[in-house]
Image 1 (cartoon, rainbow, N blue to C red):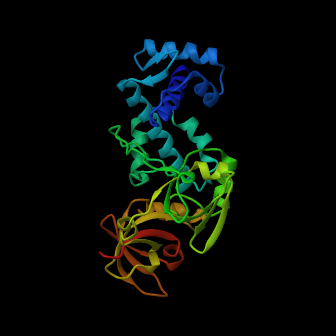
Image 2: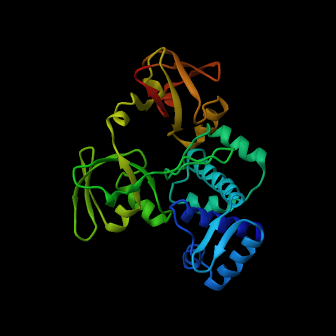
Image 3: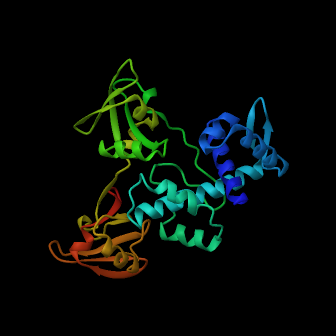
Length: 303
């Protein structure tokens, strides 16, 4: 339990430190749901172990050892979130609390097999970067949607909060990482009017502030990559498997055939209304169209 509590503190401090700020006792008390005196005692303990540097007037920052340990926990947490959504089919508003319990499982073989199963995915369901096995993590440069001006076109990168109610509300509006939106109007109360495709969406200040985005550039628009179902790939085309969207009772069959997220699949023969013959992990596999219609892949149109 002491180890788990230590990791929770390190994770919370990293969250602030990654924003360029030290973690104050008031922030940690609020984030972890404990009293400020309890936070102070714990910070002194963590400093004695060489995991943080703590000054009562400035807050806490992680040492190199502390960063390494925090990133290990964050990797576990985000991999488990991805497993819970992609493999077990849980909704993204429920996985955070479950992952908080699983992230402390320190079994390297489980972590390694989990990463392989997920295809070494690089983001969690909420869009945040997953540290690699060597402790490297892509620094997030996205800023709140509220920071952009009218007529700017932006790509939603991540959701800052894990509050289940807010995540459900965001999902209902059809907003998630990699959705491109245009800011149409900024209101004085902080609310936004945006457009996604042909859909106009109103966002309350609280929702707009937790959507992290970055400007869309011509380079990002012309990547040549699109998502489609496996059944729509033409013979000779290939793609990277993203997810299975059909009934969960058939998910096990897909996994047993080698169709795991991140797998490269190549269409050998597409018989239009009939089955498809694809190559996955160097093995030719015949799939009924009922399965192929529910396997989403990312393909490169220019390949």
